[in-house]
Image 1 (cartoon, rainbow, N blue to C red):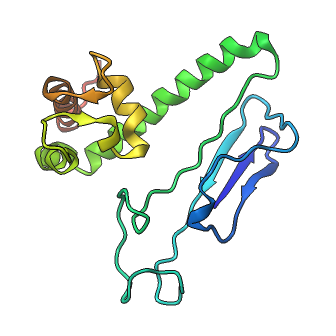
Image 2: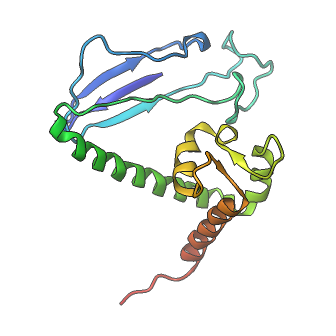
Length: 188
């Protein structure tokens, strides 16, 4: 597990490096000293899984393909970095930059959803995620990496879940993406 800051001058600064992660180390960590990252810094996270037969900690013999899930034997890694502006006057710029990056992330998620043809599988996905069978996708039932994006964009009634009409908005949006992709581009 590693997080690197790619600075605007093309240099790199390692922020976190844990070559052999242990599940028992899940926690919040704080830097001993303040780290200043200039505008334009790009953060790169790298999480690798060794599910080979040579890994003595691999719970599966023979090794199995690992997919996202909620159990410790599933793929569920993430690294989150909290930042604050160096100067109070920079708070607005940081807020705007964060919103722009969220929009880019959402656009990339949209491309991935389209590429993996989620629209075709959406009913099955919703049914599989809806652990309590109530027809709603509660925040706790959504994959961590998609929770904030989906809840922030689709949870119109702000109840921290997606009801069937909010899921329909997702379905409609995916259909719009599909229609755009399949229609010939227009030039003017």
